[in-house]
Amino acid sequence: MGYLIPALRKSFTESKILVLHIENFKEEPLQNVYTLTSLDTEEIYKFLETHIQKINAERIKIIEWRPSLNYFKDTYVKILSAVTAFLKRSDAEKRTTAVFGKRWIKNFFKNIGNINHTLLYRQMKNPVIITGSGPSLEQALPVIQKAQDSCLIIAASSSVLALSSVGITADIVIATDGGSWALKHIYPFYRSKNESAFAVNLCAALPSQCANTAQLILNDGSFWQNIVLHELALPSVIIPQRGTVTATAVELALALSSGNIYLAGLDFSVNDIRTHARPYAFDNLFYGKASRFIPFYSESYSRSRLLHGGGSMDIYASWFKEQLSKWPKRIFSIGGNKIFEHGEPSAQGELKKTDEFFKASKVENSNNFCKRGIQTLLNALKQSEYSQNIKKELNSMLFSGENEVTERELETVLKEICIKALNE
Image (cartoon, rainbow, N blue to C red; front, side):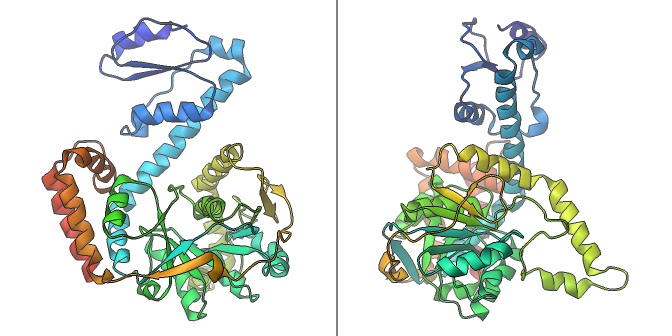
């Protein structure tokens, strides 16, 4: 009932105070105090995102009014859980962006220069199988083999090696990871002369060989990406960044098909010391380091503990659980997964050849896309209707996101990125 607010306002005069009420309560308006009355998790997320998007997690304090817990019980716990889940995920996203922001933008401008064919699509009715690289993928491989002729297969790049080891060819390989280590998953794809199409987030780390493959461009919906892709006349499908490639793959499957979606290798957990399905691109690294003093199994144990302790799997699992209520009731699991209902793919009509659903379109003069893209952003920065949005998005990726940046600072960094992208 707002008992805490005047005391907090008096003690912390410069702080922003966000108030979450369980029941409607009319309080006196105070400066820098913002109120929401809602039990809807999505509304709570939007409210928090609006007010704390530029604030680091260590500068945020959750203050509880414990009599509410005694009275409202589970409802109170639900709201508190939503707040802590949002803060945990938001903090992880900010730390990742701070580390990889410049690399993502450099990748984007480097990759648009390697696009020779884009992929256009029309929606189908066929079932879709999505493969991640979790240990349970091995159990699901026989089911996928049986169903591959009647289903569209979208494979995370990290799962391609395990699929190809049993003769399964994915229709689409999806790549979204911006780290250079992700290339180790893509190189085997080219060594096997696989003819799959690529669905790529252009901020991902992609090898130059991608120039020979038709690409379905995944646009994360950001303002700066839309401006550049529109100027270069590059078609794309808008799929927001989700932090994990398998979440992006599900969103893509929903856009491509109205059929059921089956997930394999999405474990969100470690199976003893096994972190991924075999064969896996990183295995050679561990075998190469193995010795009497550092046995392979000891290295595997250390890696599994590191992944388990990092908490990212719990964040992804929590996100998927929340999404289930928003997604259609046609997403199932093949193999070991505790989040989704289990099912087995069944043909919903005969699968036509992939090229009947996808059409490759040739791209001209992509070799100058990097310079044109940077210049497009610089020109947009000089236009008042665009500049504020662009500054806001690029500030969080290129700088700390804490302070305002000037147009000159952004221009300098963008030109540096363009030079690096052209020289790689």
